[in-house]
Length: 395
Image (cartoon, rainbow, N blue to C red; front, side):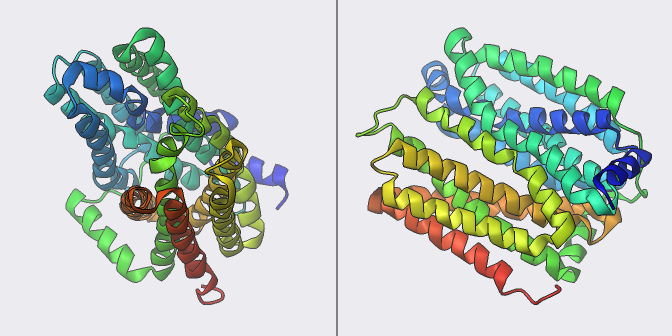
């Protein structure tokens, strides 16, 4: 099928250019909310004490995981358009509560709710897979994932700049306005499609059945989880590297490396197009090799050269994103009526591995410095490569 034919078929499914743009903006705008607090931690510590540095980012990330587990599967049974509208409007309320928080307890609770409702980003991606025709699903999912990945990478930069000029509360007020805008975008651009009604308990129990019955889902989740673990080992320790000698960058300077990573996000549609033509396995292998190469560059020159660090950021983001689009495309094709639940499995495993990777990277930095972080990254990414290379042909 030609590219023009694929787009025409997508529009026949309701995946118009306006819907694609809407889902792309919603995916990026929603997921950004769980990262806004990270550049603001010094300000939050000043206002609420040292515990703010632990409880606020932890609450938002835990909430996001709970949202993926508890809300994303509902997209297989209810209208994803309605879910996105409801979650983004609720997100606006939670963000206002965060902006007005008088103490750490209320801010942490608001952050937990923000994380739960920000999982609207994970409603957008399976929605794209549902609307896209088979022949161009990878490319369409890649376009929406470009928005999500850009939101992850740019959230820290935007938050840091706004917070530095107007204070941390202004960041949450602005984010609340953006959330209302996202609800409007969803209402005006997305089609209303309802899945097969299922009881909530049966919906959640069916997730376990999917894990047991779909070996391709297990392999995709494991390979992507290992790559995401290496990614988090790097990003959890990057600031420790560049804010110390010989670089001595500020926190704002460290955050600008996220802008470099955005270039890697734009590989997503290319990865999707390649996956549509050649299948997911080659793209996952190539992506894993990029991540291994990134850590080799960072090991060789990252402790001495900002150019090497920048190149490592670019390679690791390209590799991770390329593999992610391929693994998502593979997973969404397994059981079309269960794409929300398949997405839940993939991203839950990814975030568990990501947390372990961040912990391993931090410990490696404390014990062996930057070379220890790179060794952990190569081991994790290499394991992700082997999972893909050693899987049965045609699996």
